Each structure stands twice: as C-alpha cells, then as structure tokens.
Length: 229
Image (cartoon, rainbow, N blue to C red; front, side, top):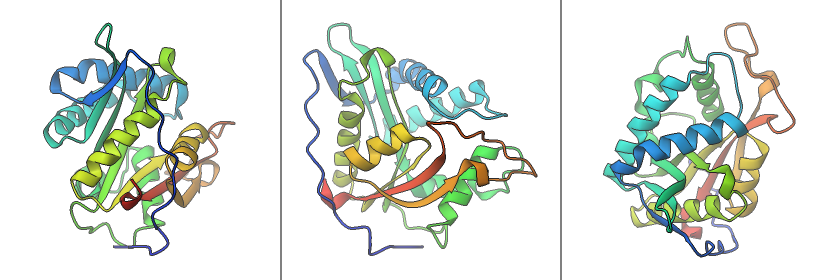
C-alpha cells in the first residue's frame, strides 16, 4: 500500500448552507429508484462517454450501490422538502471493497473504463492490498440539472465526508473524470490530485476508446485527508 506523507490536512472553506426548501438526509433503500434516475441523467449529460458504455449495466450497479450504502450509511440524498423529491445523491464505499471486487481483480478484457481506473490507481498505489476502513471511496455523485448551482453537490460531499470521519476513515478517495468534477473536488472540497491519466494516452486492446473533449481531457485520482473535515 502507498501511504503518502504529502497528503496532509488542508484548509477548505466551509460549505454554505443549502437554500430554504432543500435538505440532506441519509440514503434509505426506498430512495434507490429516484437516486438511480438522478445519477444516470447526470452522467448521460455531463460525463465522459465511450464505446461499450451500457446504461442497463450502469443501473444495475447503481442499484447494488444504493443497497450497500443503505447498509453502511455511506450514501446521502438531497431532496426538495416541499415535494420530498430526490434532487441529488452521493454514493460511497470502503475502497477495499472496490479493490477486492472481481471486476477490479481481473484483466478487464471487456471494459475499458475499469481498465482505465485500474491503471490510474496503479500510478498511486503500489499494491491493491489495502487495510479496511482507510480510504472512503466517493464513487458517484449526481445532481438534478434543474437544481445545479445551488450548492447541492458540495453539501452532499460535506455530509458524506463527515460520515467518513465518524466511521474513522483516514482518507477520502475519488476518480474525477472531467474539469467540472475536478474543480468541485479540488477547489471546493480540498482534494489533492495525486495521479493523472490523459484520455488520449490511454490504450485499450490496441484502441483509444475515450475521445477527449474540452471538458474531459484527463481523469484524476484525488485524495483528501479526513482530519481536515
């Protein structure tokens, strides 16, 4: 495992309160259908696309993550209090679960995204054999476009990072795929870019499956010491 002394607590401005009529609550299993819809929509309009991306598989994985987050307490939703509508969500897990999963342990012969994530993490971690309860893995965050710009994403992250501290995680970890999320995690939340992989340089089975765009030039592995929360 690589534990980098350079990842030290940073000074981050306190996230401002949500506007009246919005609230952050722990994710419950009954929230799953709405959470899945919000995250799928957010990723379909503002995230990197690539050949082989399958929405049905994505929805299945999000359903698994929602169930897991309801068990572990590592998921949160933002909702409109007037209508009780879910307008955003963040889903996290213990990074050891990701590193020990079959998808992460195999050779990724059919999924360029998983191969990309493995290669990115190999630029920081010397081994995927990490201790449980060390890295809080922020896997997905999405906000309904109608509520963008109201501080929903930072508030969701603040809630789950505080939960990470309560559960005694040492670091938060995320793979940030584009400039907007890199700004959110880096500038607003104090994550540090510890490894970067340019999409144009990533080769999978002899091809370059990811086409860079203005908003998506590279993927960054970003880490934050949770003592700064």
